[in-house]
Length: 494
Image 1 (cartoon, one colour):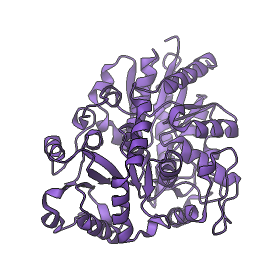
Image 2 (image 1 turned 120 degrees about the vertical axis):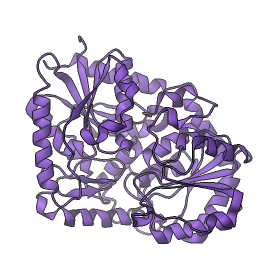
Image 3 (image 1 turned 90 degrees about the horizontal axis):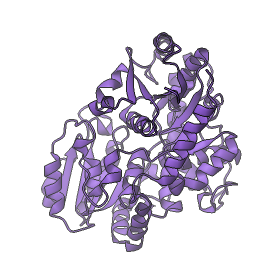
Image 4 (image 1 turned 135 degrees about the horizontal axis):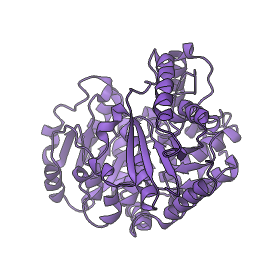
C-alpha cells in the first residue's frame, strides 16, 4: 500500500479499546490500512464487523497483558515486552512494516514504546481521554500549583481564566494522591518511578521497572505522560477543536510537536442518529443485565420530557458503600424520576452494592439497572434531562453530544479536570459539592439534583453545545485526521 500501514495499540479495558477501534475505522475511511493490535484478553470484545473492512485488520498478541498494581507486575511486564517484541518482529517485515504505531498513553506508552524503538518504528502518543485533562495536568505542573492559599485562584498561563485552580481543586485530588501513594507502595520492588500515561485514572505502570501510578500526577508534579511520550513524533487526542480548542492549542505550544484532535471517537451510529434513539445493542457487545433495551424504552416513554436524571459511575470506578447509601437516600427523598445503573462489584464487595428497599419506596419513579446499561440509548432519549456522572471521558462526550447537562461527581484521574471543563468552561452542569466531592454530604446530592433539573439555562447551554455535533463527525476532527495521516506518510522512514 502506497500510504503505508498504521498500527493502533489501545490500553487495556473497553474504555480504551472502543476509541482505538473508531480511530482505526477513521484511518481506513481515508484510504489507509489500519491494524488494531491487542492482547488476547481484549479480542472477544472486537465487533465482527470491524474485520469485514478490507482496510482494517486485527493482530492478536497471544498473551495476557501485565496487570498494573499486581505484586508480580515487574516480571509480567518483562514477559509482556518479550512476547510483544517476538510477535511484532515476526510481523514487521518489509511488506507489512507499519509507517508508525499509535500507542495509548495509558500503560502502553510506558513500556511498549521501547519495543517499537528497538524495531525502528516511529510512535505517536494516543490520548483516549480529552485535551483539557492533559492540558491542566501539564499547566498545574508548570505553575507549581501546590501552595494555593484559601480564596486564591492560581491562573494557568495560556489557558482560559475560568480554568484557574483553587484550594478546592487540590482537595478534589486528595483521594487521587492517596491512591498514588498506595500504588507506589504496591510497586516499591519494581524500581525507578519515571511515570507514564494519562487518561481515565486506572492503575498503571510508570515505565520499564516502575511502580503503578494511579490518576494524573499529584499537584505540582510532572505529568506522567510527558516523559513517556518524549520519543513520540506527535500526539493524537480523543477530542476536537470545536470542543476543546484552547486546550489542544496549549498542548501543541508546550510539547513542541504536532497535537491533533481526531475525535470524539464514538460509534458511527452516534453521528448518523441525530434526533433519534441510539440502540447500544447494535453497537457494543451486550453484557449481563436485569433489563432489556425494550424495558428501558418503555419506562422512559412513560416519563415527561426532560424529567429523568440518569445516575451512573461507569464500569471501572465507583463510590464507597457509605457514599452509595447517601446517594440512595438522596434519590429516595427527591421527587425526580431516575435511572440508576449499578455495576457488579460496586461498593468494593464481590456481590456489589444494591439499595435494598429503595424500589418499594419510590415505586414507578425509579428504574434500577444492575449490570450492563444501554447508556447511549438513555442519553439519547428525550425524557432524560440530567446526568449524575463521574465524568469519565467517554461518558462526558456521549452526554455532551446529546445535550444532557451534568451533576458532576468525579472520583479519580482525569475525571476531576473533565468535570471542571463541563462546569466552568462549557457551563453545562454543576459540581455535586463545591467543597470536596470526595466527602459529599447527603443533602448536597439532593440539592444538586434539584438545582440541575430545574435550571433551564443550563439545559439550553447543553443543547447548544450538542449542536456542534449535529452535522455529523466534526469537520475540524476530519481536518486534523488528514493532517495526521499526511504527516505520517510524507515523513515516513522505510
